[in-house]
Length: 316
Image (cartoon, rainbow, N blue to C red):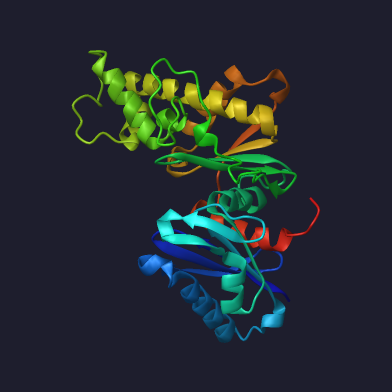
């Protein structure tokens, strides 16, 4: 039997999973991400943890396909990492560095793309050849999978759905420098921004008025309770998101759009509304595009990193 590892490196913790060749997750665990001193301890500690798993289970390295690893930054096909700010990493070759520490083959990728690949493979995209994965959290991220392969793009920014520009009357400046990025309106922070703007322009009664430290969760919960103002606010937000996803699908033409991130905890309440607004903006030939909720949660990155490893060099 062959084994392999999927590693998802975050700014706080590193998630490590041991997989069978079939994609069955045998065990997973987390270790702290030590970012001090230029993140010098991160890879050695990952290698040490992998070595401990192999020793405990009595697995020989010749039976290990390697290590797939997702990191919060761009990774070139040859393994060159071009700065990971959250990890304090500069420019170096990830494949070579972790390969020397573990004695195993290494394949690295961007963490968001790995999460998209994981959901495509074993989560909300199972059974599809092409999917668009969008994470709705503090910001908006995502990834595009075409014919089973990550769409990285010439500059490593394929799947940056959050920076699709939408038609807004008063475009807010985005952290990327542009104005009108959908991330500024349909992320968790965006929901709060839109709600506060609308509150300032109306005297309509709502449970949200006067609420200290208003959150995205507050808006969703009020809407679910039937608060008309909260519902109308989300209709505005979902209109922006539907427009952006319609644009993305015009380019990628996926079978399915997968909704993930913290906002996806709203479940069908979110999925049904986003799909409805998508249908307002979609190119007619995209009719039939399915919408699904993400299924793997925080494990998506591990699954995707392992899938990246085992599909390297395969045809779709």
